[in-house]
Length: 275
View 1 (tube, rainbow, N blue to C red):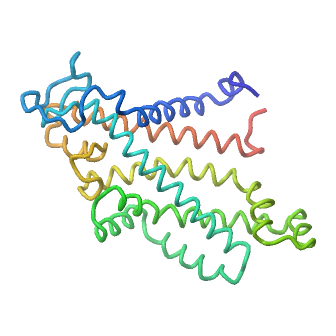
View 2 (view 1 turned 135 degrees about the vertical axis):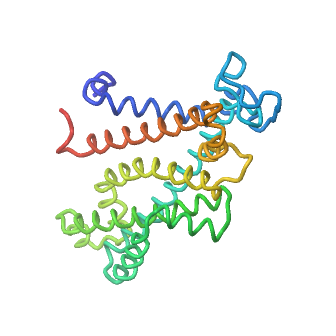
């Protein structure tokens, strides 16, 4: 299988991968790509429309929107990918433990059910309201929703895999529980977990932006897309570009991860894979 195969059979997945790659490169190379300091205030350029000098225009403080969008990509992706990665590690560990050992299943899964009984955004709002704003607290707020999602998925996957013959054979020869989980079960359930992670990243981006839009997320003047939308809402009629560009980048990033996640789900599931 080569690139031509994927372009022919999974065009939307390739589009999603390109969008995600572009934003990842943008986030990693923000210092080299941003034409100006994202926090540099130039009052005489307030709400300046897009032109050759300010490609995306300037906000009400005269800050270059393109530079702030570029640095905002770094913050949004840092928060979302960090929270999903840590949530995956912790959630998969708890779910695997609950699925393999019935002694821990009742306690772990009831805690998971309790955490999932609250909407993700409400949970995030409560955590940030208690801990305060800031990047670390926004990551923690996202993790509070990611961990039970991964734990619930992994628990079900381990329960469905545990009765398989190769697992019973490994237990019969006296292999340790940890080795069986790591060597025989995890490789067979990794696909759905990876897909879940790719689909939860845009959810974390949206939650982060929502918190910043409400004034509870990343503290200003740090550039973050949700915060940029909140700053520009009062200027939208006079200068719509102050909201259109950060909002468009937010929409494209979420779209890219969703397309990539849907494609991964189709590719990793043999019943859905296109031959």
